[in-house]
Image (cartoon, one colour):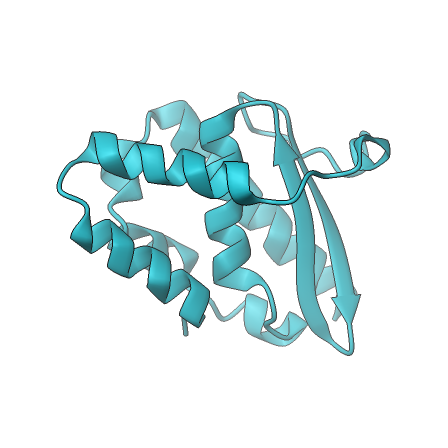
Length: 136
């Protein structure tokens, strides 16, 4: 149930030869993401369980989920961009149906992130799922 934006990322990951190039691509995805208004970077939008500072602000219009996100770490900003591609535009009901672990495993992230980054990624997924469930 991946979006075309997420499929584009998966295709690019398949094309890139090594993990150094893939990490660079993740960082580029983060750099391309729109800046989050610092006024939104408050305790209510902060994601707990991440080693880096991470904020996610949901936006739900006509039952469709979207969010802004930011981090003080470039690789984490890239992970937020990947999650945005995975979830943005889905209905709040569809968010809970996405098998994020399986989709992200297609990128090989589960094997190539540090345990701290993996824990943070799981915390971000959990936060997105909770925000969507609260909005449903």
